[in-house]
Length: 305
Image 1: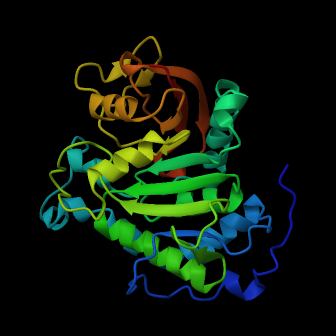
Image 2: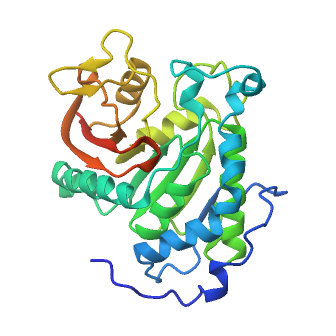
């Protein structure tokens, strides 16, 4: 039930203004909350806010270009093959409605697997792994006020776009900045971190702003993980699981997330499943719209270790 209530601080002008504001900011604010926590933003309005203000169409090429950072000069020198490992770092935009379908489905399973004692009245935490320019993290934060939403992105340029958009949202009175000194802990937080989800040193992004220990700590508190994993590397030993009828994510993803995340975390992945050999139990799947790849399959898994 998402009734339409127009937030008082959102004026009609904000749907078209500040579209060309630069993402370069002098002070990188990476964490914020809704400007007015009592506002209810329905999903269609949130989609407009993200599409027209935070991640506008006229910046789409910048987002796409930022997603090729791992390729360096190779994008101009040769054709990129489908098995190039750097494809994992490229940028794509997953549909909002499809995101809602999958996250709502996953949240239902999370409610089933979390006891009242475990919930303890704590705010739930959602992590967007490979959050890119922050598009889905912004949308989740605007529409799910009972969640803390965190985007983790390894690409420097994409992360910079995300914090630039966050600053834009603050300027437009959608968000207000917070830190440990000016928060009560009751506000829903939207945060962005430039870091590597996987342990060790990444061959293409060796100097992220956030150290690996901090990223692992953030992941360890997640209740729900979303990963637009359509181009993530598949398992070298068994790329396709015939019993489950799905492509299988590389062990670097399945094993790392299993070892870092807490038991009972629910994960949403697209077009690849987390490997059951590492404790991931497939709960459900759903075909969803995704025009960029002619449709996707979303997989809902729970960690049982």
